Image (cartoon, rainbow, N blue to C red; front, side):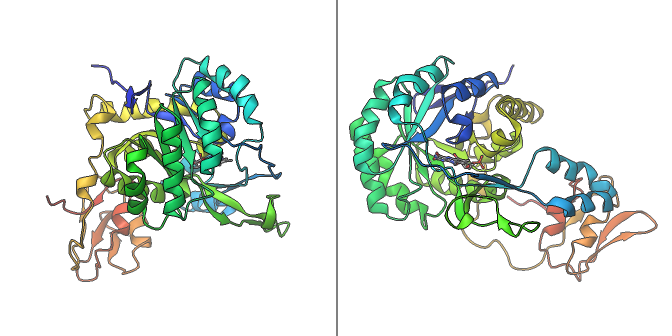
Length: 395
Ligand SMILES: Cc1cc2nc3c(=O)[nH]c(=O)nc-3n(C[C@H](O)[C@H](O)[C@H](O)COP(=O)(O)O)c2cc1C
């Protein structure tokens, strides 16, 4: 049976679970049409507000490991594929100071939304920021024919009361589904989720993290042109934070959750889905790779599901959540098991063992663990490119 990637997101149909995210890759109707041609499952537009943003230039700066990345690649013969992959898939992160849309909202209503809707895909608008602004904008946006509204909490994130007011105002202003986009700065997500659950139809997590600073050591200056040269972090560096936020939200609500933050591959998307996401959004990877990224990730989701004997993303939805321990499992060391057939003898595990518990036997070229020295920390298990080291799975 062919894999069915279609998703029902609070009544909004998606042809696959990979969406655009609010950002430069959703900045107007034309760009959203390009995403549709690139295989995206549904459209999310750039955030609009009552006033166009005055966007500093330059406003985007990639972060990568530069020279050290290539030194690593040549030093570790067995790791070349891994590090080249990182290179091809782009930077570990991106800083931006793009704010919201620099177009007047009237232009979005008249031109950008109608043009994007020509793709024949579901379209979610993104609107910010205060209750008054949303009350004015949301009904107009709904009238323009969009299928849902995401509201950004980027500039109001720390106060649950304001967040609550925004959600309530928006829900009362429109009939289409409403999604709250969460900031990673929220201290206790569960408090926020509880407060707004009754006003929203779903959640999106996460927005960018910051402010952050990156100095080009050749010039001694930041590249970005906003105040203080700062920017907000996105891309692979924030993925573990985003995955944790999605898992927290998924455990606190029955509403759909959209994961966003560092999605670059189909496996990234699967990880979010396993933690309870119904769909994912892609921003940084789309900036760095172009609109074909959406189709590639959707294809990789299909390949993962096929190779693991599943029929649809639903088969793996939320399966990680019961495995998130509510308390410490154990505090005594349990050394990993080495699968001698899978071990290539590359020595990565040995190099990264700060307890000097692993050596590669020169005779057999296989890793060996000294259980007296092993602390059971887990680095070797996660670093092995061949999955030759593992802990016994219980339960
Ligand atoms: C250049 C840029 C502009 C962004 N603009 C917006 C925006 O207008 N509204 C919003 O809610 N999020 C915005 N974001 C955040 C993204 O939608 C997304 O939440 C974040 O970048 C994490 O996803 P990623 O790692 O795939 O980029 C922007 C991100 C970037 C990089």
